[in-house]
Length: 89
Image (cartoon, rainbow, N blue to C red; front, side, top):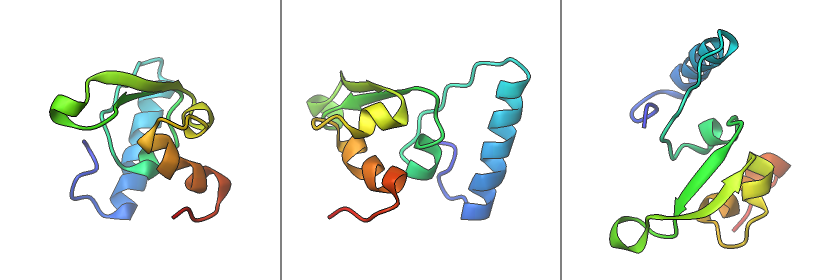
């Protein structure tokens, strides 16, 4: 989780660096819980449904929009309002 402990401005800088690597033709794999990073992904593998012994299965995969539409995805549940610009309870 590269954003752990980072200020939001540092996260923006990290995203610029990651995108520069992608622009140079590299594949970048990031394990992350920060939704501001997740929403920028080309492809998401949402592994769960829980952590630890309750996880380990692919719950959803696809673009951020596809994952946000998956009812079984906790990530999608919290990603949807960020993508749509609204709040979700």
